[in-house]
Amino acid sequence: MNNEDYKEKLNESEKLLLKIEWVLGAFTTLIFIVALEVAALGVLPLPWSIAAGVLGFILFAVGIVYCLKIEQITGFYECPKCGHKYVPSFKTVLWGMHNGRTRYMKCPKCGERSWQKKVLS
Image (cartoon, rainbow, N blue to C red; front, side, top):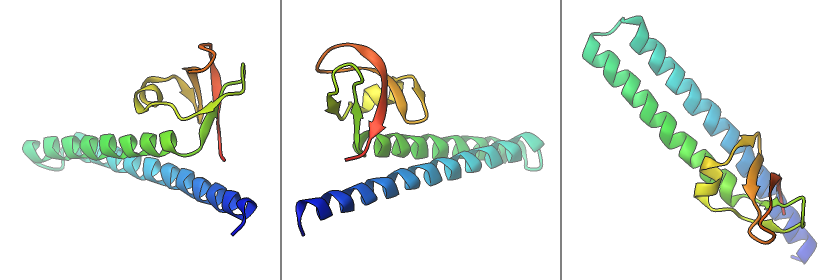
């Protein structure tokens, strides 16, 4: 397998991971909404309603953490100021303002803050 084939295969794998991220995020959000609806409608006794809400929140939180981890390790972010490509820390991805896969972060090379886009290899 030559270098170009390897890069193409890696790019396809990264695209698949990002699709899985969206599916996982949508699925865990749906579970959370359904659990909250079940808890809020009062069709179950109060302890079971509370348990449904708490379980829905826990599943949502775990799913979102996995989605963020996938986003962190897949591809790179590119600084528009200096062109540096890097993988940010999980903490930076977790707390950084974002719009889709574009995040407002500080470049580790030039130190400038800017909106940085996700770039696949």
